[in-house]
Amino acid sequence: MSQGNFVYLTKERLVEIEKELKEMKTNGRKKMAEKIATARAHGDLSENAEYDAAKEEQGLFELKISHIEDSLSRARIIDKSQLTKGQVGILSQVKIKNLKTKKSFDYLLVSPEEADFQEGKISVTSPVGKGLIGAKVGDKVKVKAPAGLLEFEILSIE
Image (tube, rainbow, N blue to C red; front, top):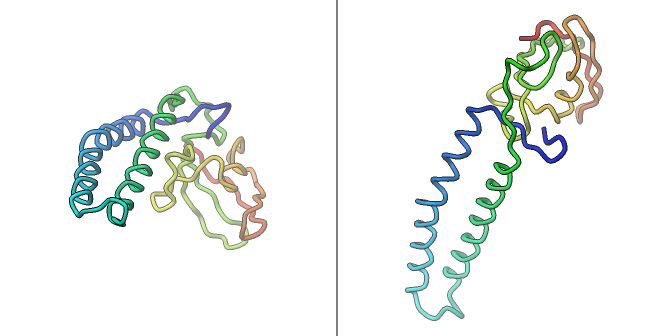
């Protein structure tokens, strides 16, 4: 949830990202340099597609490092204990029921940087996330999603 220009992260996710960045800057850059050196050894650089590909990969790799550094520079830590209780917000564990299919779902609402649908973590900026923000137990919310208009009932919030 980049509000203003901030990137909101949990302390755990911040540590993971910092660890990933450190790995990229040390071992990742070393591997990139080795790839380029290997490609350079294959002869004339003007006709060396492997060298060009390695240099392009290095550029994309450095761009990714730059993006991560930018995100970290704008990071704000979210402390779950300071969040509003009783209504859906970032870091809320929500149980909802689709009123059409009668199926229930459990989701943890997180920042876009932490979203992982396979783990039940949805972004507060996703259509469902936006629709749930501010809702309370018992509320019925309508969500405009790519699949059409969905209606949910909030069963619980933790």
